[in-house]
Image (tube, rainbow, N blue to C red):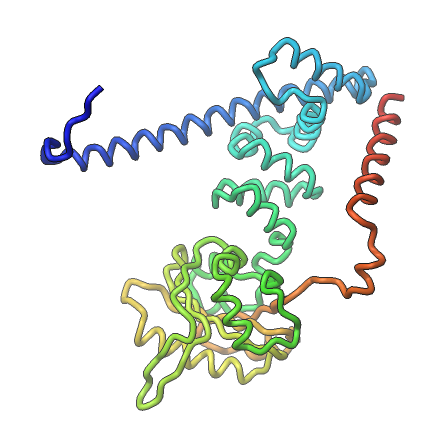
Length: 352
């Protein structure tokens, strides 16, 4: 088959080609999502039936393994019928007994995302929250695991702020949900006594990881961003623009404890950003102080009466254990052996 030479392609060809290419890609995504939905609904129905027979007939783990072997023999071209996956199906049906929720929400995310949630999140409310966040933000499984391990559910919306009386609703609610406390910056590999500039440079060097930690919607503008006010030049530690909030977010780093005077400096920066950088269509800029520690009462008094939208959160540089404690921990091999033995005991009890 011969293809026309590039110079023979008529006017408008490239535009049509790009449009069709995007249309095909969107159709493929929709098809993949549709296939995933049908697969997850099938798995849920299988898990529901297994669960019902376990409760009614006392089926044990060996029966599930035999069922998996028979299904694989009947459908050799189809993957997913191992005994292990059938047990995930049972757990999935047990976790989501409401079929309408499965159809509308749980079946919309990839199956292995759901398996990850079954393994790592035991609280029902948290599972619902993470499931909806995967749908909302399109997280990969690795990103989902990272957010679970960093306890995003517990931290979300916990930053102390004055948004309720400085921003209109629903902007105030969205801003409160956007900022969290604490921020875990252990990907930097720095100790607690690191200097502010060292932390700042580390964050810029790991900007992708930092953006993931900040959350969906943050776009990095720059660090040490200059502001000319009068005859003096001032510099912002970190400047972001939030795509959902439609505003600048000024981040100030403090390696020590939060002090009330930090608010005065941030208030000055926000006024300057709103005057010098903010577009008329943008929302009011928001300030965030990231500090090593804080006292809630001091932060509350400092925020009270301020007119600029500001928040205060802590950061954690490292979660690494001291070496003397690491030496006392069991090895990976020891943990795997203990888990294997525990699973065998569970399966044995289930069979009986």
